[in-house]
Length: 341
Image (tube, rainbow, N blue to C red; front, side, top):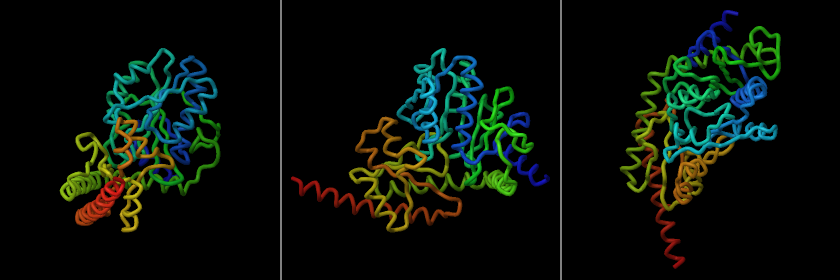
């Protein structure tokens, strides 16, 4: 039990939750999100009649698919569009909020663009309008300072290890698990708890806490050096959202006149990793299109992620190599245009 208690303490500490807040150990973000949808509908909406879900239109598949499921049950599910900076604002929420609005689902940061939402503004808005707020922080946990106790958040979810997730419910928010259980370690989720996995999850949470200061500064340095070097090598390349609050380990850039999937193919042949999104997150071109970018620009964008094990020298070489590959493809694209005429 000592190991379990230590794991619980680390999980609560990373979330910045109060000891009175409820905690559910889940298998993933997808399960946590499903649990919250289920509880909001049965424990709140059925009782108070406020059956409108608001979902940020940049959310991943777990949120959007759950929204569709509860739409079939008669709920009004509305995807709320962000502004050109990828942000939700009070003014935007005002356009969608009605007396029927019961909940908002939001991720604190985007897994591809790295843009962080203005949480204080949104959480206050939800509190003023008595809207239940679910916040997922998986894409920025351990990469930015966050304390659940500092915000009027109803539900918080995150995962730091494959096969495991954490869900917190603010004290005073009614919540009944999807599968009732008498399991004393995890009473809000049926089935016996995997104590080894739980211990590993707690240790990973503690590692994130211990390394946060150093890793956050190092990652921000890597990202900034990458973007500066890339622009120096190829001025036509445009990193996005440089003047916004972002997580330190993500960068997204436009490579004009070159299709992103073609560039990605050539980068991978040189063992340079980048992403177009897909899977549990939306495609990058769709995300940027929802932020107001034209289709030509959106189709030329790639996202990059940095790791604490990388050095400035490695990141600088990566930016230089990307620039060289891009310039070759840009010349090829220009030659093709000339041939067409």
